[in-house]
Length: 404
Ligand SMILES: *Cc1c(COP(=O)(O)O)cnc(C)c1O
Image (cartoon, rainbow, N blue to C red):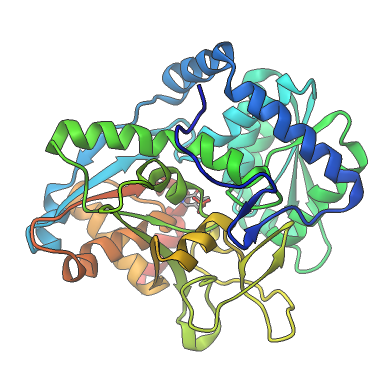
């Protein structure tokens, strides 16, 4: 049994059309080949599947509900029926645990007692520290000093969970520098260390592995919507940082050509200000090589990476996974920008109309689903939104923004 039946991509060289690949130093190349082989063996192993499924059920709380949001649907109008796939109800409050648990099991199988990760907002670091505590693995998380300062509560969480948080002071002292540091550490200690990448990014096979572990979202949603509506949805929508919660929802619907995919990128303070995180959906978007693979990435004309900007730390990443670039290039998905200001409207509406405090990341998709999608879809459309995380981590930002 494979994790994702019918997955045609990536090809044997790790490419999604012209995107993807493995742009890494020689020392890591063999580790990536070994990782791919072990991953494939594990995906076909019934014992592993059983262990993962048991943990997802008993520990993470899967399947997560598919909830019909009646009041937000009324606000949207045009007869739209909006369903929320409640990843915020997963243990640790977001979809990230689906991936870290799968990869921590993979680390055990690889015989590697030590796990490293990079983190920006700290959410991936917390999800990794959680999985490592559960499975008895040593865990070290690289984090820019700038982010350590901004994300104190998550630093404390990681430490409580037994992880070592290592400050990174190079570059701008944020996520992209922490990622470089993690890659350097992995090169030095690849014999005893597995690197858990947090989204569908990085060199092959990481984008594939993370997608497969997150595809549980779409597999459940497919069965749940057939049960609730007796048919497939007209559209799927999710926010896109690196792109893992969106791809997790989209992937199992890839062959259903009538199901439209909408990815929502963070427009920050507006495309015209240059302060945004729109890697795909900007007319001037260009592919480049970043963190080990070829994909759309924010860059200057001469190919220097430009730092991203978004009110939401989880979308504040200059790149995007290669499979999304492929979806964009082939027209399978469309990528839409939503500003900080509009995301905050999405937060407020979801709080007061549904009694659910969304993560800032999720709120980007919520805004687009309620205010833009009804104009683009036929009347009475059925839409599933990946509700990627809860907003407890963002309440201080909300207080600051809503006081103004
Ligand atoms: C990290 C995060 C995201 C963005 O990551 P993707 O890989 O694009 O899913 C979105 N929502 C929440 C709640 C997150 O924690």
